[in-house]
Structures are given as structure tokens and as C-alpha cells.
Length: 121
Image: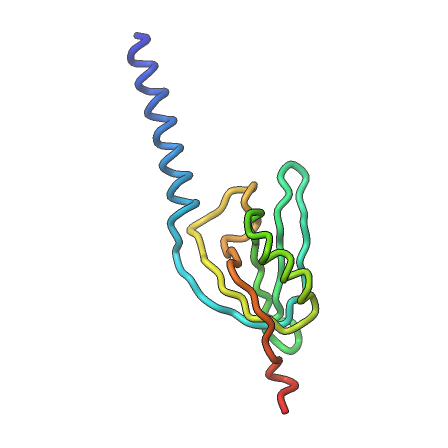
């Protein structure tokens, strides 16, 4: 009986580990978006995550919400620096996420300033 319980417990642990590895390492898509960076915040009660938003329209009707992993400190610093400016971000989309990684399934990996198409000369 102990052997069966041990095998079941080991199977559950292995399945959970494989599920976590799949969610964390396998990406659904990669891409680039640009817009005005309107929000970057560090929020949460149990697990603090970095969350941001980019406005992709003139009226703010199209909002791209994203998360940033804690390990990407350079990206977080640049996002704080470029707050309110037009930026281009590279991101990866995961199938889903865990609450300690972020609210969104889109994770920004790179950010750079961009010239706004509304004010080009």
C-alpha cells in the first residue's frame, strides 16, 4: 500500500513539475508592439509583480497590458525611465501564467524609445 501511495505522490509531483516547466519555458508567440507607455507598476499582496500598459491608439481605446519578470531588472529600469513616452517593446506570449509571474500572459523582454508617429516631422 505504501508503494502505491508513493508512486501516486511521485506521479503528481512530476506532472506538476512538467506543467510548470511547460508554462514557464514554452512560448506561444513572440512579437513587437509600440505605443505610448502609460503605466508601469509593482503590485500585488502575496507576490509582487511588475505590470504595465501601452496605449496603441490616439484615444487610448487599444490598450496592451503586459508583465515583466523580476529577473529583467534592466527592462524594468528602462520602462520607468520611458514612462509617458512612445516606446517599442519586444515580448513573448505564454499559454497562461501563474499569479507569482504576472497578471498578463504577455511578458516584455526588451524596450527601446521610439519616435511617435503622431509628431513626426
